[in-house]
Length: 148
Image (cartoon, rainbow, N blue to C red; front, side):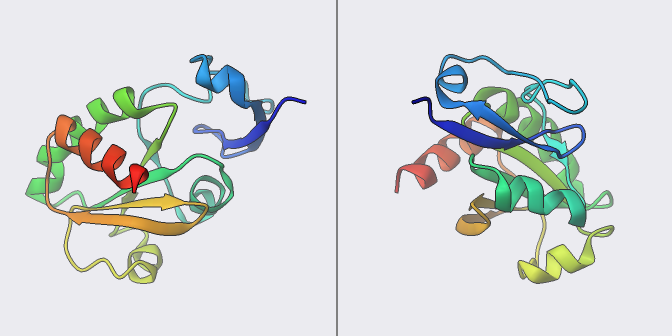
């Protein structure tokens, strides 16, 4: 029997069943509701509603960048975070949460400085790192955290 994963669509946040072997083979698949690719090599902007689908209900880990538009280091890290998304998908979903717009999420995770990245698996925090990083460092830090 084929093992299925639950994946949240980056476009509409609908939960999709997806065969693990297709994911391991690099098949991006499409959302059953909206038809968007399940992986596009880009980060996903999350709000309170979509956060639960991606961070708590999806079977793949989610690396969340908590940021704000006025933050210089956040702006500097943004293209690096995007580059890391292309390298880490489909193993990890990269997502961004604007702390100005989603203050309740920022408070829930105790965000005191930005940028702060939190790696979540099934809604549970498994690693946290504050400060801007380049794409290679983001990728290494994420892979190391998952290997622990």
